[in-house]
Image 1 (cartoon, rainbow, N blue to C red):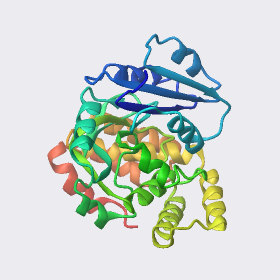
Image 2 (image 1 turned 60 degrees about the horizontal axis):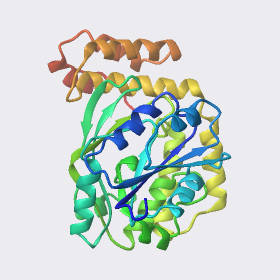
Image 3 (image 1 turned 180 degrees about the vertical axis):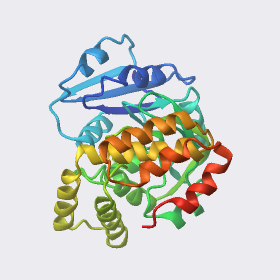
Length: 315
């Protein structure tokens, strides 16, 4: 495509499990005038085969050795032809009107540099868990900074401003939070008040960090927000902490999160809460919280929230 309205950019690294769903959700958008840049970032599974198996002239495949998410996205956006960049992740699903809604909004609001939206949260099997509304207005987002105000794969932004702020930070730590802080310095950022994506959480999601790693990450982002600079020593400390987070603990925190959300979200499901709390018990049989959640899963959902508030362990 010579002059597409939008360039959708997605980096893939060993994403074969959900990749076809992500690709289909973009190709089936109500707005058709876009290019879909897919960066295969050195995948060792069947991701490349899946991408090549899709026949659509709008797909632009970049097959490269593994560089990490930040560099892969920078590479894809550098090659983009449109003035608007829509982010996408290989395990999420864009809802059919997403691109049209965001394109229309940016066309009508020249002072906005990034627009995101709400999300339906789904688990690794595609089950709906709950709906999440991030801060919507620029005023709300400013009050919440430096906390990340977006579901990263839901955003659309202006390519010119992306280049202006120096692209994604090549240090692959909290790159989305750092990017949004930089964009907040040159324009407004908002979220649309309706869901734009089905956002999948998995055991390996970045949000499932240990308590210590989460604290270090928050401090890392806060320091950048205040100074505009990254401390190399701080980066090393955070990276080491991330590496120490065991797969077992990530699985545990994932199961605990699902148990809680299935008990008292806007879509309660006590059966799935019970299943996930049992999985958490298997991973960490000496922790009390999954036993409490398992016990609560036998109660009617209408009284679970108040019960858990009184019974949950104090931090």
